[in-house]
Length: 584
Image (cartoon, rainbow, N blue to C red; front, side):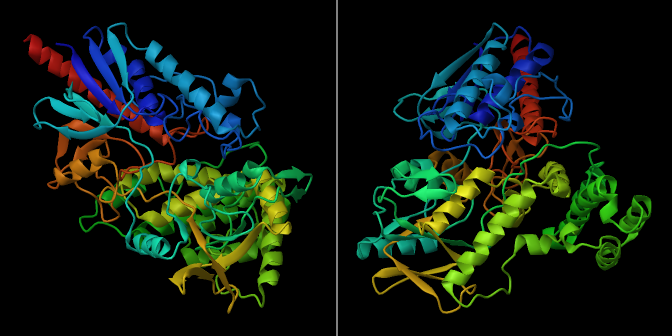
């Protein structure tokens, strides 16, 4: 009987895993025969999020030249490098293009086809366009993967869960809001992938409260404006008359920072410097564990500052007051307060200093006398962000971006560090394309988008939803519709996916934040005793070794690629040894 590997999830993660299986098979599994079963109701390669069957108005939030599914020499892994084209090379488009998701879906489908074609001749891939419901079977024996609508399970020597973003049951607040909306004939759209949301209930001209100012809001904005027939004429938006009025707020009260609109030139900051393997080893060696804010964040803050000032001092020395060698020596030796004093004396212009706390919460303690005064401020804030993020004179911002990628690559080894870091990373490093923010400004001037403020609070009372923010004291907005513009939290306990729920009930353990615990070396699922399951693996955002994404920009180390390689090699070695035992 041929060995069997079941991969649940055929999107970018599943495709990346197959690519690594193909790359490593000649070394680890030549000539033994293998059936790979892909289980996913969505198309292989693209999966749900990147499927071609979605609105052509929806873009990626990365330049086409910054998107690759292929490894390079910067990926630290045991398997071989197998280079391949970036999205812009494959599609023969300008590298600075923000491609639509349909094109990315086509690219991912092509990558999947190439990965399958690169497998050894005796490895066969089968796609099952349905959902996996549960996995059963003994730790030391073959697993059974039960599929929707199938009376018999797939038999698997190994199972890899390569699930992406998950639907989730409503938490207590969302459930209460949904119940209230149903009782009072209101509209409540809970967290969801925006492209899958039914927006038809959001009526033209009616106010709609929106909680969330990230990429899900940008998608919502697009679908409710251009998607309803509006269009842009230069810096002006010409409404169709079918748009609702979107009142948007969030914890920060401002949109994610624009994608940086210029290329890197010159020397890169030598990273990691203050947060690398040695620092992570020391944290993991602590018998009492660690606290992210107390024990980890200070080193990250120092690392990001080093990236920023390295670029400033080496490229723009005229904007500094001392030599880089002197600054670097004092910066390396100093504690936080000493570094702050050093920066104040060595960097004259506050605009050239890195203040992560101010970046994170720009509206803390800020108050406006009226709703209109706040609209003016936020438009000016976004315009300033666009100018800065497209001006290479502020290229230390791009150095900080590289620092964020470096830090993320190290943090994976620490497991679950809580939700704040991931939100902060996305806010600084994974914001919308500049053109989208320009569209937001046009919509604001046209009165289609209105800004609520920071720490937006929503209550359901008197038959309506009411939103308020301390940013504009005394201001309240009433609406009969509320949209939660964000993805559901990737928690195992609340996942609607029956397979994950069954795994949890069967003994798989979750972190305090609700993420599935896996072995950091190869992705094996851990039980409540901390034992890795010999035949079950998991990769993706619902695990405690989640990465920034299943694909990445070239030459940045690709943490997901590193994980895929480790899992592929562990799986192939297990299957090889299994075949050897069967022969013996």
